[in-house]
Image (cartoon, rainbow, N blue to C red):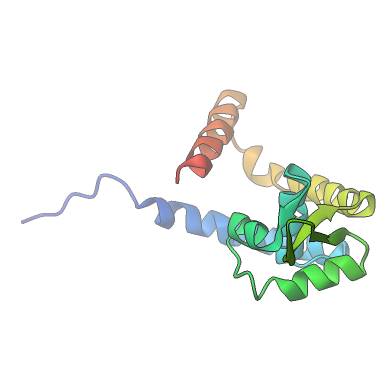
Length: 141
């Protein structure tokens, strides 16, 4: 029996692109003094200003105990603030600071300029469809 492969698996198609994107982002983040996790935290907090550490960890796919060192570092850099939750003293509410937003915006702008290497290979209609579809797939749970 002959197996006919209609298409590659999504992970098979996306993994090489993801590896290339991450490799391209690493030096940009290092230049801005951010780790990949630190950048992920700033992006998430900029989307939603106040979150508990547990909710943030879930939103970015991190273990809530392992993210504490990243949060400590971001707080020491003045990029985030952590305040006790008035409703639950065991929890901390998180917010991005103006300097955190500035470093996130600078890193993000540089990352997105670098993404033109890939997006620039698409014609404008394909580019719009590709970005729209990625956004839709990212919302699927």
